[in-house]
Amino acid sequence: MSKKVLILSGSFRKHGNSDLLCDEFKRGAEEVGHSVEKIFINEKQIHYCRGCGVCNSTHQCVIKDDMAEILDKMVKADVIVMATPVYFYSMNGQMKTLIDRTVPRYGEISHKDFYFIVAAADNSHANMEKTLEGFRGFTEDCLEDAREKGVIYGTGAWQIGDIKGQPAMQEAYEAGRNI
Image (cartoon, rainbow, N blue to C red; front, side):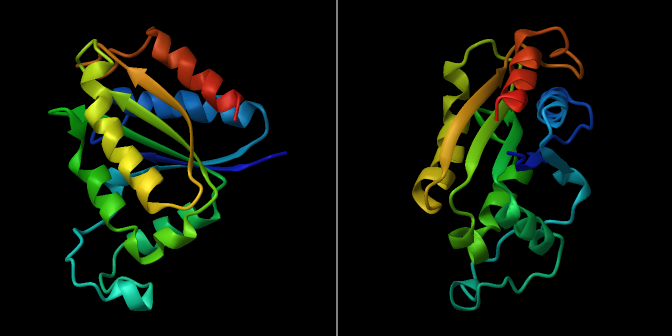
């Protein structure tokens, strides 16, 4: 059965290491017939959450930017891939801002499969765990029946393209194929 896959690429650098892993995931998923959309969130206007609380009762954000469109896509997706470079042991600010802005509709982002892609210069998976804790806090504590299906660790990737030829590229491709 074909699934709707939404890839949220948090990289600041198009064709950066985490973004290249997104492309491989996408390629694998499309090859087996899934419908895939990748959003390069750096190209979107996503402003910081103001913490005003209006969305708690209206389920709409008072900020008018691209986040409403992204939320619609998250609600409609069967599978969501969240990818980020690791900055100082955490997800980058763009991805965190996107997560913060899901509040108006996070109750609707339910029954989804999630994959996480993290890329860092470090060679240790252990040093990426804090980033994954942030993703898991969002999916496990805030969303109903979110299922973590896989993590792709892009290690040893500092400069653009360092991830090419690394095992993570094949892992991302296979994860996409095996949705």
